[in-house]
Length: 422
Image (cartoon, rainbow, N blue to C red):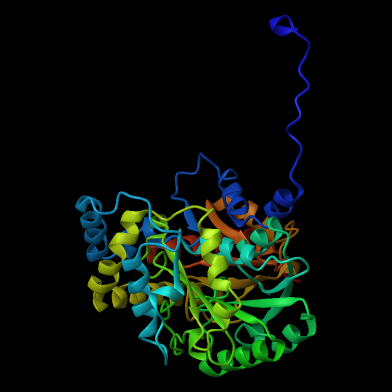
C-alpha cells in the first residue's frame, strides 16, 4: 500500500458505448492504421491514395491571395478576440453573398453559421436533429463521419443506396422505402465523396420532390462545390430550396486546397423560411455556443479569400485534378481484378470494385489494402469503411506522376497475387 493508506478504488475507466459505436465508423483510424503496415525498408515514396488532402503537393498549393489574406488578418490585430457563436459577422456576410450568386433568391448573413470545417458542420447538424426517436437517411457508400456523429448523439441512421450502374445516383425508391414518420432529414454529398459523381439538375430536382413528399429537410454537403471536371456543371441543392428546405454545408478546405485551416459553414438555403420557423438555425447557433470555434483570424480573412482569389487559380487546380482523374481512370482499366463503374467527374475520389475471385490469398477489401500497403507502399481506403465491402476508394488528388507510379504498383501487386488462368 502506498502513502500508508488503503488501496484506492478508482471509479473511472468504464467504456462509453456511444463512443465505441461512433468509433466503428472512424475512417481516419482505418486509413492511418495502414501506415503502420508499411515496410519501413522500402525506399520508394509512399503513395497516399487513401485520403483527400491535396495540400501536400506543390501542384495543388492554395492561391497566393488566400495566404496573403490570412497573413493580413492575423497581423491586423483585429481578430484576436472571441467571436459570437454564429461566427464573425463579416465572414457570415461573405458566405451569404458567395452562395447567393448561384441561387434564385438571396441568402442573408443571418442564414449562415460559421463552423470549424465541414466535419464540424456534420457534428452540429447531427446533434441538432437528434430528437428522441428521430432518424436520418444517409447515403451508402458515404462519408462515415455522418454515421459516427449520429451514433455519438444517439440519432438513428438508415442507409439508402447510391446506384453504380446509374452514375451513383440516389435510389429514390429506396429512400421512400426506409423513411417513416420519425425521419427528419436525408443527406446528399455533391460533388460526391466517395464516388466522384456530380448530380444533374434533373436528379437534384427529383431529390427535392422526394424530400417534400416525405416532409423532411435535405442536408446538402457541398464541400467539393465546383470541384468538377467532367461534362456536368455543379448545381447547388439550394436552387430547389423552394420545393423542400435545404441546409447547405460547405467550406474552403477542398476548393481552396486548405483542409488544415478548418473553416466551413452551415447555411439555410430555404426561401420559404421553414428552417427558421422550425428553429433549426436557432438550434445550430445554440450548439455552436457550446462547441469548438473556428479560428477568428481565418474567419476575418474569409471575405478577402473569397473576393481576391482569381479564376485562374481555380481553373488551374481543376485542370490538374482533371488530368489526375483521367490518369486514374485509364490506369484502373489496365488492372484486371478491379472495375471502375463510373468515370469520376468531380470531388477527388473514385470507387472501385474488387474481383476477389481472380486474386489468390486476398480475403476482402481490408486484406487487399493491408497487403498493398505492406508490399507496395501504397495506401488505399478500404470500401468497408464507407459501407461497401470488397470495394476500395482511391483519391486522385495526388501529384500526377506519383499517382501514376502508385497505380502501376497496384497493377504489379494484382499480377503477383492473380490466380493462374486456366
